[in-house]
Amino acid sequence: MILGDLLDELRHNILRDSSDLIAGSPDILWDNETLVRYIDQAQKRFARRSLIIRDGDTASVTRITLATGVDEYACHSSVIAIISARLTGENGDMRRISHTANQVYDQPDSWYWDVNSQVSMPDGKPLAYYTDEEVKTDNTGHAQLVSMKVYPKPSAAYNGQIINLRVVRGPLATLDPNNLSAELEIPENWQLEMLYWAAARALDVMDRDAGDATRSDRFMAKFDRAVNEAAIEAKRKLYAKDRWGFGHNGFTWDR
Image (cartoon, rainbow, N blue to C red; front, side, top):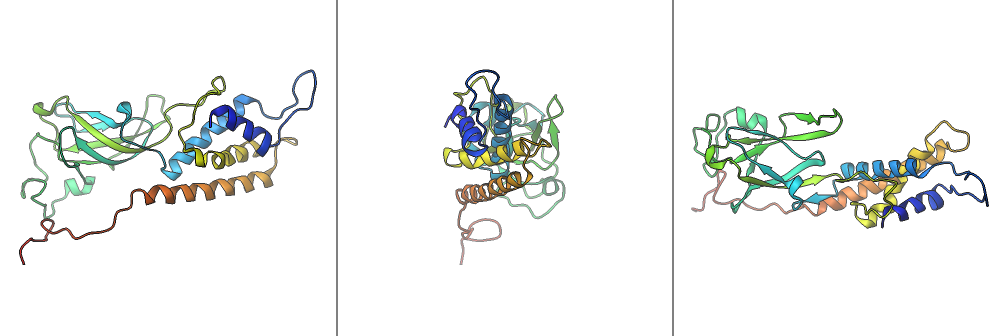
């Protein structure tokens, strides 16, 4: 559905906010700018809590350009989490590790790098990445950015090469009341349920006419249930059965 359809659904079918005046100023309780702002926030909240928007194609979001000697890169502000990372031209993904795993010695797997060099590898081909170093903010101080670090630091031979990401992200654009033909990024089968948050926010005001705490709570509960269902659906798409790992990580092909 486009934004105009959702605005109409929210105003008339959920909030029951309509005017019967033939002439004069409309007596509606919420203007379009306010309701569109609530719909925009509802879409962002639904995406962040359900993790339902997956992306591996949008270049501005899923491409990291390596620079010589640089190991930390800020992801696009819409990125909530990184699912996988792969250097262009490689057949396998980079290994996901953690800050602790990279700084504290353990028995490493020679499948990934030399057995004695995990904490002291020279600059070269990045083999692993981690995202638990810190969370950054953009230049406005508002949007939180996922900070991605690679290991080891890229050498000059890898300067300008691309890491391709698969990410969970939020919507890319902010909804505009002047563009009611805009399409939302939340899957259409969840868009009506998403409106429950916008309705709850609209009714959660100290106003004799517009405020209604009971209805607000009821709509928020519906929104929470929908988010939980969408999150289960999203996680199911990433599910893979456990399998034996013969040939690496302590297993052997020999009997």
